[in-house]
Amino acid sequence: MIQLIQVDGTVVNLSQSPQFVEHYLKPSAGAEYIIKQEINTGGCYDELLSTVPDDGVIIDIGSNVGLWSIYMGAKKRKFFCVEPYEPHNMVARELFKILGFDATIFHGVIYSRGDLLRLFVEPQGTHANRVGGDGTHLVSSITLGNLMKINDIDSVDLLKMDCEG
Image 1 (tube, one colour):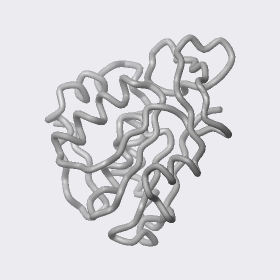
Image 2 (image 1 turned 60 degrees about the vertical axis):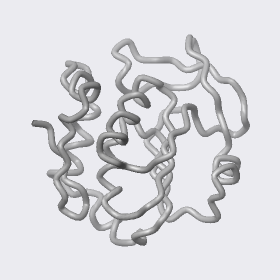
Image 3 (image 1 turned 180 degrees about the vertical axis):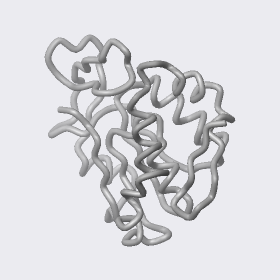
Image 4 (image 1 turned 120 degrees about the vertical axis):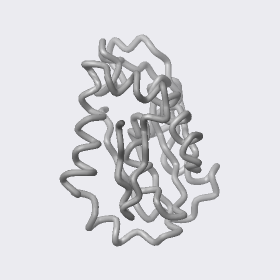
C-alpha cells in the first residue's frame, strides 16, 4: 500500500487510484517518491503550514500528480493546481476524486502573458518538463493575476512553485 500522511496526521491510501499506482511504480517516477519522502519523512513543510489558515487559499504551481496539495489539504483550504503535463493532471484528478479532495486544476503554465507555448517533455514524462526550446507539445499559459481573477481569488495564503522555465 502506498500511503501519504497529511499535515494533520490523517493517513491517505494512494493505492486506491490505479492510475497513481501505475505512475508511481514506473522506474522514472523519482520525483513523486522524493515528494512523498519530503512530506512524510522530512516534515520539511510542517512549520510553513502552521502559517496557513484552515480556510486559506493555496496555489500549487507545478503540481505534478497532486501529492503536495493532498498533503496540505487536510483542512478546508482552497486549492488551485497548475500543471502543464496532462498525464499528471489525469492522475491528480483521479486521486482527488477518490479522496473527495476539492481542487481546481489548470492544465497549463503561469507565464508573463496568456499564450500558447511549446512544452518540452522529458522522455520519461515524469518531471522536469519545461516551456521553450524544441518543445513538441502546445500548452496554454496564463498570468498569475488572471488565474486569480477568473477564480475570484482576492489573496493567496501560500504560493508553492516547483516549475522549470
